[in-house]
Length: 78
Ligand SMILES: [Zn+2]
Image 1 (cartoon, rainbow, N blue to C red):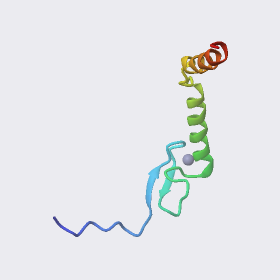
Image 2 (image 1 turned 30 degrees about the vertical axis):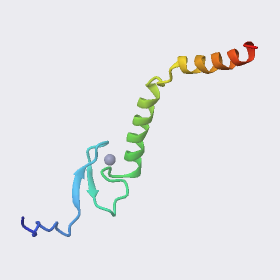
Image 3 (image 1 turned 60 degrees about the horizontal axis):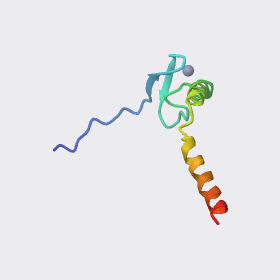
């Protein structure tokens, strides 16, 4: 409806770093936003990686069995 949006102030927005809770500059100048530093970002990513590493791989063994079965059949059925 209206085209005027409240223009963001030139000052960089500050958020709390998810890792350490410290002040973090949420602006393109901060490549690690919303984290305050590269270290905090890496800490979070590390936690994420280890978390997903714990998840069991969703691979169904039946698929491999089927593949083997087909190969076996083609070599046996003659
Ligand atoms: Zn931090």
